Image 1 (cartoon, rainbow, N blue to C red):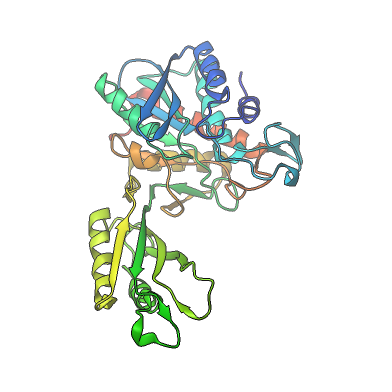
Image 2 (image 1 turned 135 degrees about the vertical axis):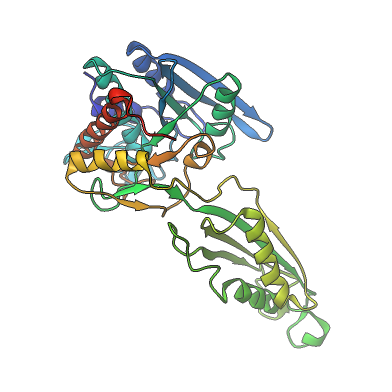
Length: 389
């Protein structure tokens, strides 16, 4: 029997800051291979991005295939002196496993691995296949990880029916929230070009700050929408306004602002960009400006409640005694890629300390998550009862 804590602790001790593998995939591959999984390591490249190691494991060749997905890469630990323990030490104290990635998401991934191994060890019948898709690029640009792994799998005929992704979705207590979708993310930059001059002679200059203020207000003036069936209203936040002017008697030549929109499934990136361009143009007047958007692979999606969502919810309720809320809040995850090949549900430990100094996960959460995943496996394969896609 493998415990989720044992696996999580070993993973936390791997310095796998994106895009470094840090030994995490080596360890995970050995554990899964010892449990009977066929394991393959995949390295993907992209011009302008660093190479990334990934792992694919599978046991069984038939449908249905339940895939567990996750990532072993973590964000940098920050200032080490502020940590109570070594962020890569895997220390246990106060009922918690401490370290970078303990919550996001080495703990959740460890629980999935332990659940699969223990399910098989205890004679669980797999009327189909179990697979793992594990990337080292989730916290990075996301170009050489899960998206390319899914393309690789499709090209060789691999098929997946449902996916459970153990990101830290619980908010206040374990089991209170399941993510059935994610908002999209779109980042834009607005640069306004003016004419520099003396503040005492404004008629000889053109102040870009004044134009930028009007355009920014146009972006914020009215709600983008009122929400959809499964999503809150879309939200635009201006995150920087930059002029770079240190002189109090000079009208600057240029002003810029950056903003991010977390949008719901009422928008596509193209339709949202059109709306934002219309809003800016409505207040531009004769101002010269550039409105540009960063490429995005983070589109809004939802796995509509059905048999698989109900199965995961029932497993949570069975283990912790509460029915989780179905949510689409929060940031993005690799579920945005997986939803293109099969229904995906996210469920994992309390995420309050993810990316924070003294990141940690409850030992009780790890045990309960492993139990939830085992229950999902049992119900999924019991008498061919896997839910329809």
